[in-house]
Length: 249
Image 1 (cartoon, rainbow, N blue to C red):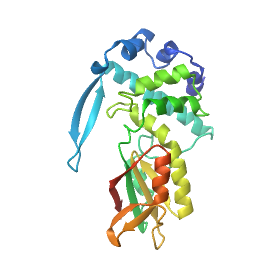
Image 2 (image 1 turned 180 degrees about the horizontal axis):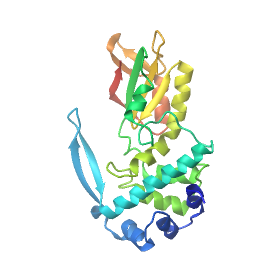
Image 3 (image 1 turned 45 degrees about the horizontal axis):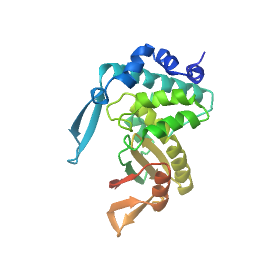
Image 4 (image 1 turned 90 degrees about the horizontal axis):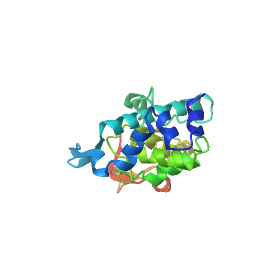
């Protein structure tokens, strides 16, 4: 039986535990008995521009559980892609056989390359969004109790934590609808679009860069901001752009 069929067939915590190679009692302990402050070790690491990033590293048992989830979900996605039921060629981060280099290659030899970052990418994906995806997505359509358990495994303090092995693959699931809309926007504007994690890239060989995606600020060729259509799509998809991290090459 396929991995997706197995996942769709489970109905409770015990079933989820066995599917993730865990004892039901161990899973129950990690989710409901272990005090929240003991589940993660939290610390800050500096970013390049002087700010810091909060890391929430799961304890060993929870880390293994999340690692197993981060294997199961991509297996399900591969089954869907092979069956022609789901496809996302625009996402390059956190995907098998995709890297930051495959993302860059998509935009070589272009006159313009515009980048914009999603602000607080992981933290903006909360428990409700994760649970809701697994219930409402037509390809997964999981039992609500199962979706709840998966969201509890993946989330910490009502968000996907930086430092969890399952956060990257879950974030790609949630951002799929964003990618779909941005591919459409790019095609209508004569551009090519890809996403690597929280970094959105648009490129074109047109003489002028489409204003729907990015506009030059006050005529300064070194300063650009996201266009209103790009900002509207990102906002409607439940995300926000980081205005300080837009750049045009």
